[in-house]
Length: 611
Image (tube, rainbow, N blue to C red):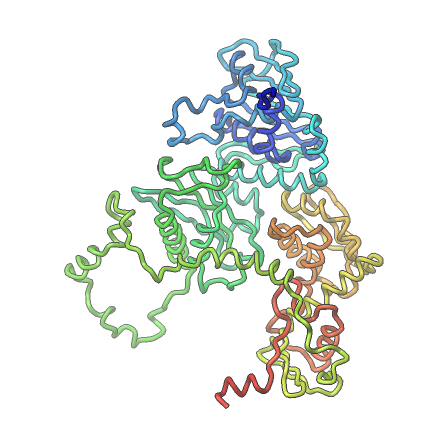
């Protein structure tokens, strides 16, 4: 029988490898921007047409390449950054695998212009399907320009899986933001369809954060800076009042590389404990610098997930640094001893901090771990540590809604036709301005007003969107909405669906929109706030939840417009809400899977009281 195993042709092998590296236009943006940074550029331009599907070009003023390097850079595993296996454990550059340009060349038509300062002329190369079609000398400025055209032209199935231009543009802006945030000393520009979205002058990290995330953070950032022999942490966190209901402006970088880490996110969240509501998320842009031998960046194709040699130490440092920063800038609650003279009489205030006490304090293991050279690894383990359930803390919010919604086949014991439920003459009581008590035969329901109203609004919006567009009420005084470039990209993605849901929003110049109309039940003057929160909630739906754009919007609008916990309701409002709830198809849970009400039966109550 003939042999069965053969070697794949290079172009097919490159396309397979490209699937790991170049998944969408934003993947190429990341790789090309990082290469420009590694080339020592001080100015980097990103030019986009058709959300990167037609053209994606990066121009830099970096070191450029020789003619030989320009030709070989498109080969698989071609890299200037690694020569021995030991180099893998001392990585300081951004790109290093030698797969980016080879992957791009396998799935797009590529034009390269590059020139070194010491050369009189540069090199021009055209490639297609991993094959060099043209190479010739060319007049060019110092640096490199790489233009990627017609992405996935030779892999139609992959091209068909790309999202809308607005959705792909949002991913591009995300990648651009991460690289630009990490290198504030470099000038970055982003131009899309001949319109400049970003012009980021070189400056300080704080200036770059404000440029990218909005002027509202300008006076609300707290500096974080801690240096030890093991690692350094620096950056900014937002004051508690900037915390949002969605996981929005949160950035971690390790050795200037953007990373995703639920573990370190929990460290920051724990530093804010009791300073922000449990369902809120603080803003942070934090950089961790440590010896490259202590971190493995090669554990994931995108290099966004990394492995620390000692995660517990990194966690402890991050938590301590953020806590210290918040306390130092008087953000955390402090005691004012002037308010209570009796406090001045306490032993700890009256007695001096003697040398004996100082010696006892400095001999502790935690003190040593943070102050003595190479002692960080000896911080003692605490079995009651809050690290124990960090994963549950972080993941439960994103998974619970999906799991509970998927398994919510509970039979509703109270329907509008159930004789036990008589809302017409039942006496309704509101508890803690949050819960509605509804009596029934030998039982009562405890209804959470916000969860219940979210369910009502969700089903109303869902039904309306299936039949015909929601009616729009034109505004007598239209509101102007100024967005960051990132939020403007989101708006372009959802503006059509918003129109269907009763919101008439029109472009009005660069990153500016005018709200011409809203659904009739939106309170006048509240339009901008609703859209702001809507954008935040829409952006940060868990990627594991495969909702359509309209489904995400409906859920976001229901959450935004629902009556909140803590609001006093009249008898009429409570009765209307209860009637509307039990007219729903699924009244027992809110759209995010939380209970809308709980039932308490008489025998259950008697057991609770030991009767």
